[in-house]
Image (cartoon, rainbow, N blue to C red):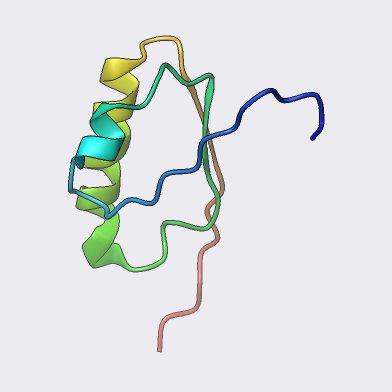
Length: 71
């Protein structure tokens, strides 16, 4: 599909480095859309992204962030 010979999708839990995450081949892009939602999760999200970027120094992080109204 889309001329991609093989595409691997791995679920993850922010802040947890699983065996699946350790076994990933090098990535080109980390797509992180709408992951910064709950402020209490930010540290775990950034720790996971740091791990992936440290493992793959040339990887690019593509992310979005929307400021939401707080009640």
